[in-house]
Image (cartoon, rainbow, N blue to C red; front, side, top):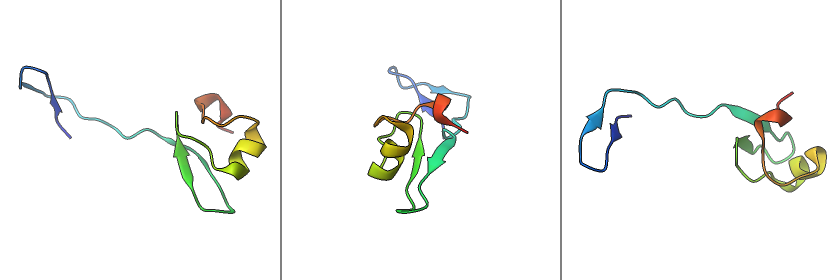
Length: 56
């Protein structure tokens, strides 16, 4: 996916999607860094927002 600047130019770099850092076996949701956890994962990790440090 090309990156467009505010002036309309295109940068010759590619974007790599963020790694999936957790997935819930109960509701099949997959989350990435900064995503809100489902209720099951929030209970498991003790907070609502997915952090890379939660990765096992």
